[in-house]
Length: 154
Image (cartoon, rainbow, N blue to C red; front, side, top):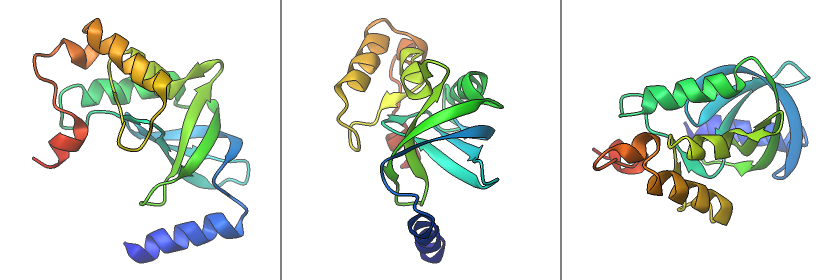
């Protein structure tokens, strides 16, 4: 695993793929609600982790709905990615835009994601989660929704 991460980071360094960059690409796969694969203009596949949010896992309540929403929003489309970094697994972290919509924000509005406050302090994302939570939208309509980070430890 360590070799894969190091080689991925080395690739990004050597190709000039630095921390803050905006690029366009086509979404060719939706792995789950907060992770997609895009194909860039050099025909390279890049795994993108949506910055600032954490969607329910596949086997978790609302995991399937989160993946479907992400797919409906961006699969097969040309998107703009505002890269904010690279995570410890070598995935590009970023905000994904399709037309004028930010996919990260839309998932929060739909109640299909948590604001991932541990890694992101964006007040706008926190507000969007609060609004969905307060209005019991999506997973916030459940009595005791379990965060993905807690669910992964179960």
